[in-house]
Image (cartoon, rainbow, N blue to C red; front, top):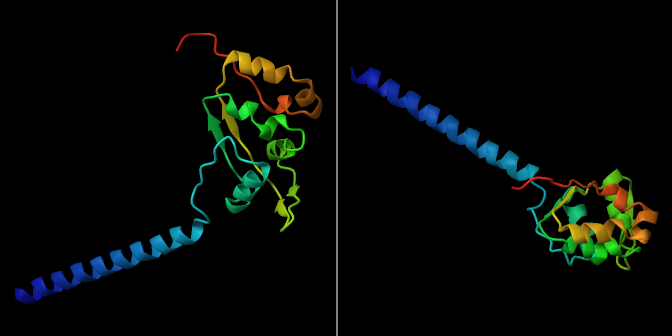
Length: 148
C-alpha cells in the first residue's frame, strides 16, 4: 500500500515540478516580449519627447483626453510640430532631426480620442492653417446629440 502512495506522491512532485518549469518559461517569454513599460505623457510634451517615446514603444503612442488641452497644445497648433500628427495618422515614415541623433520612425501610429467642448472643436475646425495642411481632416468629429 505504501508503494502506491509513494508512487502517487512522486507523480504529484513531478507534476508540480513541470508546472513550475512551465510558469518560469512563460514569465521569461513574457518579459522578453515587453520592450518598454507603458509611459504616460502629458499634453505639454514636445514633438521630440513624443517621437522618442514612440520610438521606445514600437512606434505607437495613444492619446485619450477629456479636455481640449491636446487640441490647443503646440503639438497640433504649431505648423512645425504638426508633421508628427500627420505622419502618425497615415503611418508614413517620420524623421525628427535632432542635434544628438535623428529619430527615425518607419510606421508611426498615433491613435487619438479627444473629448472636447464644442467651442474648442469649433475653433479647431475653423483654423485655416490647420485646414490647409490637413490636420483637421485627420480628426473625425462625433457630436453626441442626446443626453448621457
